[in-house]
Amino acid sequence: MEKTELKPKLLITGVAGGLAQLVVDLLARKYRLVGIDPRPLPDGIRFPGEFASMDYRSRRLDELFRQHDFHAVLHLGRLPLGYLAKDSDRFNVNVLGTRHLLELCARHRVQNVVVCSSFHVYGAHPHNPLYLSEDDPLRASHTFPELVDAVELDNTATAFLLKHPEIRVVVLRPCNVIGPSIRNRISTFLRSRFCPYSLGFDPPMQFLHEADFARAVKLALECPKRGVYNVAGEGVVPFTHAIRIAGARAVPFAQLLVSPLGLPLRGLGFPLHLADYFRFPVVISDQPFRREFGFRSQITTRDALNDVRSTGTEEE
Amino acid sequence: MVHLMLDQWRKKLVESQLTPELVEKIDQAVNRRINSAGFDPWGLDPETVKNVVAAMLPVYRKYFRVDSVGAEKIPEGRVLLVSNHGGQIPLDGFIIGMSLIVDAPKPRIVRGMFERWATHLPFVGSFFGKLGQVVGDQRNCLDLLSREEAVLVFPEGVQACGKTVQHRYELMRFGSGFMRLALEAGTPIIPVAVIGCEEAYPSLLNIKPLAKLLSAPYVPITPLFPFLGPLGLIPLPTRISVRFGEPLRFEGDPDAPDTEIDLKVERVRAAVQAELSEGLRLRGDRLFTGSGAHAEATVETDTANTEVVETTEEKVIPGDGKN
Image (cartoon, rainbow over all chains, first blue to last red; front, side, top):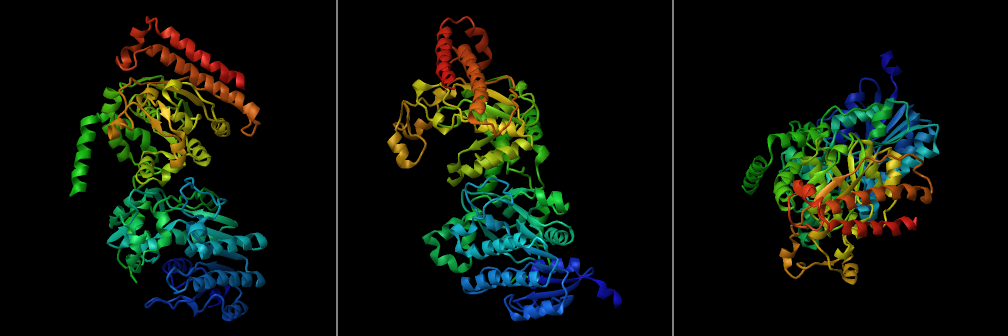
């Protein structure tokens, strides 16, 4: 038992999500884990460490930092759209929660912080060059208030990175992360029988297998570099081809749903804020991450797309 | 069902039009960068390229009887093709792209930089994308060059595309952006002249107020368009020739002041003009007749062409004096 005491301690947020569970599996042997999430753990999932269900704004988080001496904090949890009824509530949990968490990291001198953002923050703008770099403006919130929290979370994390040179902060902006155990929008779409796309538009997209992203998070935790990094998979594939490879039928209605005609259909849960991502390319360059962290995606784009449907999937 | 029929039809088209050697050539040109899903890093789809080449080969060979000269001068690796522009639709870009696939000893995929507004148009943007074309953005251009691609630019800009027929083959002012990119990427420049495209849609008049209203770059009136409706969209069967010049190499600071850059730009412009004049001289007044291959032999003795040379060369001078 003495040996476990020597293992460094990690705090991981969002452990009820599919992605964090993969990261947890990768790290469980090397680290002692503490997991938190505002959501309860899904049935049948056993967290290999201490789990607490709490809002990231909660005072209980302060207590957690007082009790444990964290070697690193992995902030992987951003509440998805639709989890809380009101957008303002989600904003509070995601942005104020992140701020609270990072403040605690600074106060308790946590050495390493990894924050998971998303490529969505760049925004789907028709004038985007292919291969956006980390320095490009974050335009996502210009058109869609639903994405304000994503952009604000990213801003909070990058500001923290600049303000605290003594802490090793890594902000990851992955492309579409897909896989059988992840329940984000894009994976759910690709898994369903019919996947909407915008007629006449077929932007190149990037996909990263969940296992590859879990490896990227582990690299970010263990490599002695700091900064903001895009993380992408092997190659680009136009959206309708991606749908076909994943085994869904492409239905050209995405644009219709956004138009006033689609008003009665909106209850079906189509994320309107993603409509532009179905029309214009948001392709990111991951060269710096590959160069500085030695990251190589091990699962090809085709295999990743083929894998979204594989068994063991628990759909909501 | 419809999909399957279309697929079969496409397969037949490719088989009937493309020789196995040509298919091999296309594969050679694209295959080195194709990912597991079958696309290159800019979204090029080799199948779309094959379909388009198969569908357009008769147009290229039989309708426009394209004569391609000098494609062997294009070096391997990164290269910037600089061409004249005209003819209302970017037919010249298409001709250059085709000629570098079907007529070049070493086939290349030409990366054109299309106008930003095309990204808003349904079908157009995605179709261009699958042919390996990218949005006209300096970053895209540098990215492509640094990955050893052949990029095509029209430094006269989109306005030149809309010039009326009496101004055909008058090179307009060249923008200097391409030169800075070439210097930054250490890229050789190939001057290119396309002759024949500028008469395929002879624009008599550019209705500028209407263009402004539609926020289009220009609205042309040709003998056939818009009076003949969709028929007016058919280009005239001009004989087209495309000429590639010797590679030009430049060295210097990409951030040099405009005066310095403009001198280099002017050298490229002169080289394009030289190719253009030579092509016009060889063509003479035989706008619609003859096949490309015979042009040189028959026109050499033609007296009418001397006139053309003089007029085009005169036109160079004001441009030279300006800088």
